Length: 124
Image (cartoon, rainbow, N blue to C red):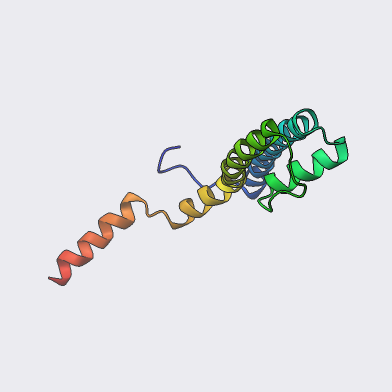
């Protein structure tokens, strides 16, 4: 977007925010599905317990149940590392339209910069 473009209307900002939230929700939902399937098949947990464990790991809270098999422990550790990155990425995606709006609000266009330089030169 060029520097001289006007700020977007609030409705357009809300549309962009809704799109970003949808992308973040899809990312979190897909990651949750990976965790649920992994806990169900590798740890032998019932679906509801697998959902609970995957949700807690993905949300950054930590595991609920103790894992007994080595394959489940390896999956849980890899899923925990993956989940930490996904949580940060999803929050970043969701908040990016707001950050973009704030940057536009604080942006000085070239005429403001030139007038500030002229004022400095006149003060000397």
